[in-house]
Image (cartoon, rainbow, N blue to C red; front, side):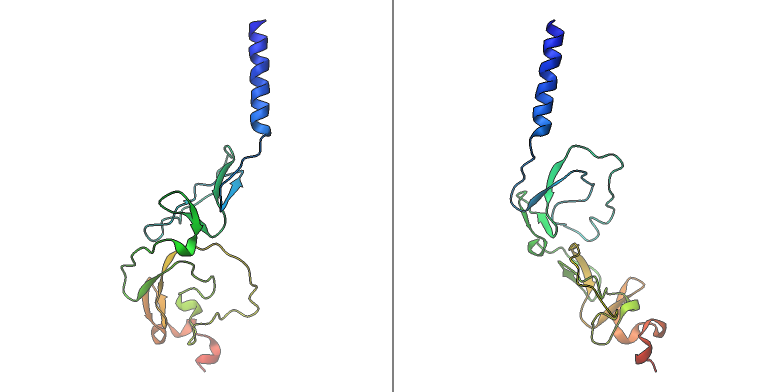
Length: 161
């Protein structure tokens, strides 16, 4: 009899616990299948590159909303307010929220630095702080070079004749 009462109480407490809505703090949202992505402001480049969704979802938890990261105090702040990390390669600078297009790759190089893709759709993409090439420079084999040094096969056809 005691075992049955104990079992019944366990079921009641578990069902009450699961029926409660998880409440998150300012700038946070509930994530039902939390990935291993870092939620904090990065302190070095490529810190959150290897980020995958889990095969098995765990318990729902709070995470920072899109384009927000946790600061050193654990508060979710806009990604653009994260302290910059150091960029060590020549002709690079820290960019808190680099554009999706153009990237800094020679394959998308244009003299004016505008996106070469026609018909862009304005969508919100997640800010992933990165070291990007400074204005007028584009990345070739991992190195930021002046626009003129990008291989001709990558430059837009109307620019090379």
